[in-house]
Length: 450
Image (cartoon, rainbow, N blue to C red; front, side):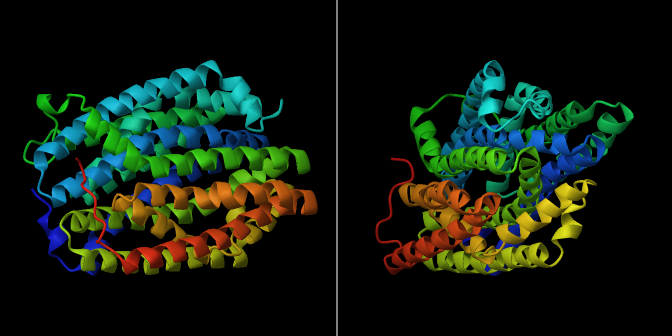
């Protein structure tokens, strides 16, 4: 099946068709992490939550390498399908597998060899490092599975099968939700049980995705010919994926600084609070990424087909939907923060600290949806440098200096307030850049693979 409807069907209908499965999948992926946090917080304790929070930078770094390959390849495949270049699209598929395996092995080896120094640098204490170590040893050991699962799922979505990609994610989340309480409570394996449940769920989902890509009736499918390394494809995929890669790397360093600042000003309990609000905010960010993933094949295909009016329409609709989503996150965070954080812990002091931090963190959250969509839009149409700049602007140009300055003035509250402050400045920059792009849109088109 060739997804030619991307260039002919009503844009609003297409965005709904492609975004809804992606939204469900991204929400499920977020719940995937939240389930671990909830069961660990309720079943192991507040210090285990803090230990899990310490692992976030390392998990972000692993995710960064996965998106370096997966997001770039998915974008490239969408544009190649728009040009009806099915041979090269399948070659990209084969290179996705080879690159993910190579990078996955690298991350696993480096992560396991230097695990303790890395975790201490990320903000672990003598109290929290046993929890963090126990969790990450298992996650890193299965890193290749994780890379292939996320990378190939993105390819399936970009090739015109968003519902099957969604089902793969739902399968992983459902299994993880069932296995978590079994391993944590019934088998009394603690935080290690949560990691094992995560890995087993991803293995089953990867088998499902592999079966989909073995169907020779689909425009994209595995064959012996596609597994030939192509330097041009690798370079183009990695260059497009560089924006989300650098965004995740920047997020890694920012979370490290947040953890270290919180450790200095508030201790392990403050890090635990950040672990909770990070999971809550992450849910709404992932919903927005669902919209951008729905936008990606539509924008990429129509940009490849030079149908620029359709590209503008899908951008506008995606911005509206994402802004509504983050506004809902703002309302939940401001009105019922205590109710939300109580899902993660029974510790009263951790509840109060987390609710206070959540109110501050989402103070300007409605602006975040717009900034995320614009940043991903540049990546969708191959404007790598602009996408990289926008991806890094919030994390490095604004949030990083705020995290250094604000805590010196207001202590732990300064850490929380640095986040909405950076949201505001990053949104203004994104607005200026998208207005400039729209004035000359389509006039400086570049070749996709040349």
